[in-house]
Length: 254
Figure 1 (cartoon, one colour):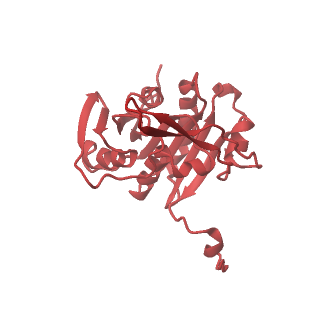
Figure 2 (cartoon, one colour):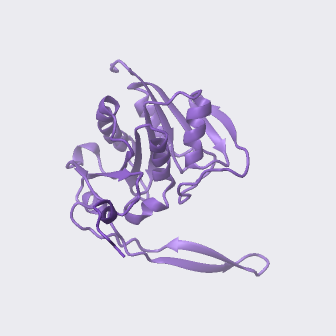
Figure 3 (cartoon, one colour):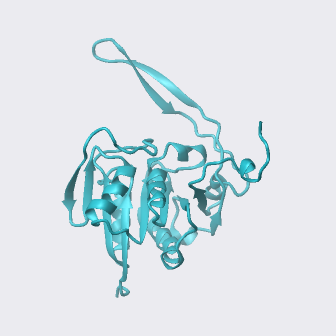
């Protein structure tokens, strides 16, 4: 028997596209508990799109299915804006969840992440927002990760988040019962090993592909990667204020 649904509206966005198994699984799971769970997501995979908004051309919204909408050629941040301003008629949802992303968003990678950008945009609009990623490359356990998401959002829906704060959550790809704990972490670090691979198109002209051949995250204690490596859910609070903390303390850096 399903519990009585809470009268809450949750907006789901992502950077993997409206067809992604992660966002569809999360929507199906959360619909058991909340009255309105809406997907507004890009029409294609935009991994690595970062925090871009579309100013140079108009956008279209297409209704794909009940409570599933896609923004044609739109970014994750666009999807938050059109989700709130159009699909929800200007009424802010109780929560924005960006994900569940296929793969992690750890360390400096959050600067590229369209998943994290979706949560950041929700925070800019004054909505409690969470980015969620699953640490795997295949055999994704999205149903198990959805149980973690439910645990995390229940206190947020009751108490909200601090102003200008949003969460970057990374979940190990293990069964719910195997998760050791939920850890508040800091953004980690990795040594980048991107490679530019050169190919030739059918006409013999060079083309290039930027590829991350190695990740090399540093497992410093209480960093996001350290938590995942040890079977914890990593919860990293992020701030809209990107000022270096040293400056905030009044310490000269030049």
